[in-house]
Length: 225
Image (tube, rainbow, N blue to C red; front, side):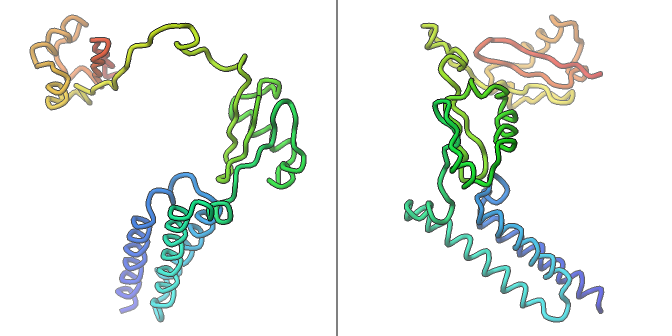
């Protein structure tokens, strides 16, 4: 009987967590703000308790639903009343701008210089002279605006008109011809066979992945090892 109770409460925990996570949305598994982080950990802990509480499973179940509802209500509140985001999620903090480090803001963000320089290196900036502005976002990520002289040149900078690009279409996957994708690309089996023979292959089974780029009219093939 205890085994049945254990299985039942475990399934109840999994189903409840799944439903609450679906309702709360992908934000819980993407970039989290402070409250989402705390509520995510708490909901997980309560879910584990629900899975093992055989005597009174309704207690952690109620707590689980309450935490989920509070998270949903706070998300609705920040969407309906944008000003509330400042108090619930926090605000971005400028840590550096125009060669000036803001000591008070670093202290407010609970970062010392070593932490700040680590975050810069993670973004690919090993020289602080390359940075125009560094902002700590409310989710804990560091956003960096490089100096104009350090930014990659764009076609607009070079007075070049760039052609629009399209995503590649997988026409062969693991040796199988994706006929629907092939037709969507405006090609047929005869064209594919001719393209394979031109590259020295006899059949699609020899190909691990084949991608057709419409904008370049090019078929890229990756053979099986």
